[in-house]
Each structure stands twice: as structure tokens, then as C-alpha cells.
Amino acid sequence: MAKSVAVIVGSLRKESINHRLMLALQNLAGDRLQFHPLHIGDLPHYNEELWAEPPVPVLRLKDRVEHSDAVLAITPEYNRSYPGVIKNALDWGTRPYGENSWKDKPAAITGASPGVIGAAVGQARLKTDMLAVGMVMMPTPEAYIQWKPEAYAADGQVTDATTAKFLGGFVDAFAAWIEKHG
Image (cartoon, rainbow, N blue to C red):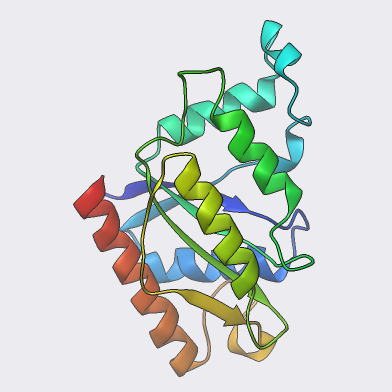
């Protein structure tokens, strides 16, 4: 049976390279992992006062995470960090106090950028924060992806054999991590 994965894509553009990376990973996962993108762009800025009448997007985020077997974050790198919309989602998921939706979820991070280091610094910062909210982070393999558009088809298929092998290894490791820690 497929494991359910809540997916955080840090870029809000539908055609972003990180959204396309998610499609590629989903294709490589086949029937082992079922991806459920979290709609983090719909979340209001975190405000403790909003818990009096929790916004529907917040309740939807918490429900999806709680009903998933794992979390996958796919992030761009903005100014040597990750996008604030991800931090906002992490904050909402940890509240109200004592109701941390992220706690003990097996998790992994990857991300793409046009640059050679493939969002490595942003991923490192995000990993620290994902650990801080209680996720069980996959330590290796790390996947810092320099985006090369010619390696991917529009439907999410990976057309470059070397890229497909590397990303396939990442997906295999993540599926095994979920089995071990889920």
C-alpha cells in the first residue's frame, strides 16, 4: 500500500522548478508513495489570536499532515535561506501548544535552483527547523539539485538517465526511511 506524503513546495508558482521537481519525484516513486501537496500559500501569517476561530487553510494543513505517513520539503533558496511561507507553515503546524502536527513524522528535504549548489544552504537551514519541530529527518542522501530543464519532460518524467538514477536513489532512500521510522 502506498505511503501518504505531505509535500511542502516552497515556491508558490505552479510552474516553478521546485514544483516540477516534485512531479519528477512523484513519477519516480510510482505506486510506493502518494504525494499530497500542502497549499501553504493559502495560510495567513501566523497569529496566535487566530486560534479563537482557526482559518480553514490552517485546519486543512494540520489535518493533511496528521493523516500523512511522512513529510517531504522541496525548497528553492532565497537569499541563502528558504522561503518564509515554509516557516509560516511550520509554525502553524506546531500550534496550538501540545498539538504539534509535525512531531515524529519521517521527513526529507530536497530542492532545486539554477545555481551549481542547488539550494544547499536553504536546505541546511530548513533541516534545522524541521528537526526543531520534531520531524525525524532522513540524513542521507542529500539532494541538492542544479536545475537543468533539458533533463525533465513537461509531464514530470526525468529524461536524463544520470538525473533519473540519482533522483531514483533519493526516492528509494526516502521510501525506506518512511518504512523504518513510520
